[in-house]
Length: 497
Image 1 (cartoon, rainbow, N blue to C red):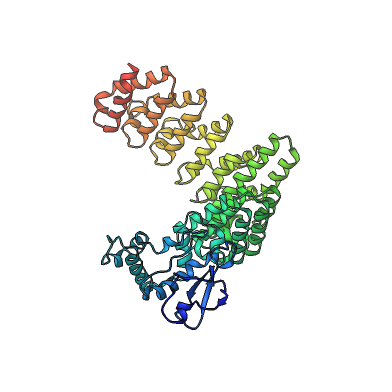
Image 2 (spheres, rainbow, N blue to C red; image 1 turned 60 degrees about the vertical axis):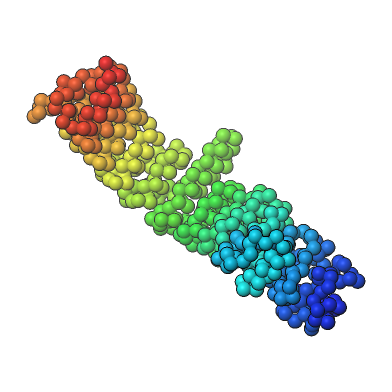
């Protein structure tokens, strides 16, 4: 709290009668006198409200309860002058009615006597003594024109107090002056270790990182390195700060930040928070490299790709175990989706070597689906061979009935070439020797495999679609016993005819 200069008490205070001029000294109207700590006859504090640059101009909120305690007891409240902030809002009836709903119910809410309302407000404020933090939050919520200078010294406390106060600070970082942003940065650096661990504090740091000031980003990056990027990445709030930094800082700082994760890639991938950091690194570095290449800066593109290589090497070496891991499978998919062609092909090759295990796995099937989407036709041919290699019908039927492998079959139908789709449709129409019916009939009866049939009908050529529907219609009486098969007819049969 700012130190207020002690001045001579006004005549009314000396005589114990209260200020006869509503707090203003008759001889100096620019000076506003208030009792200090309930001792009006021993000392008083001078408020210069006309000076907007005075250090105490943002401390009225903290001192106002003291004013109310003294003047409220005398039967009236001081009428604070109009300054840089609307101080009268602190003691108006509607505000306190909202702030202290429970206590206000017994008060005379309909009274039109402003003095009577003010006395009641003073009594409430005496019952509810405000801390500096509460006063600061009251200030920014009551005054739409408040700035960060209004809460200097309490910025960190205000930011972590509640969401409304945080939104105020975030808004000032976006639209305020550079001096305001420096004010927040100074406070943030002093409490950096606490802020990145806090839900609201981490959001304030993220807002600073997205500002337009390279200097602010540089100073925050230095703080990251002091705390340890790995520590932040493994924390539920810190990982979000690191992710924002990855997408906000320049290439040089990004390269330096990534290097801190060398030797810790697997630990990050297996962590519920760290895996998001690895995903974001793969996306950001790959995008930067592609952007550099588009600008014909091949050297920068190559350097960025090389900086990512140690992560891709770890992914390739442990691709099978990562692909069947709940977090690892996400990282492998991001590598397929964003990496440079050479790196992506290396990951694809490693995945195909364990494709049959991944196909039936809870998480591995997603990796294989991404392989189908991002791979070349030759890659999809390898997966197709796994579906049709064992006498065709048995393999395709069993995989289509499998909870996870059926997703891979569907994806291959959707993204495969016309030739590959035709191969699958032909397998569906092959007649089984034991039952003398085609595979499509058995699949239509199954709760899972019927989705493969629907996808095949949707993606097949018109002549292939007609073949499938004709085969199903021949077995209409049998299929009518199965609701899932009936749905296929309701959706498709009429349109085919």
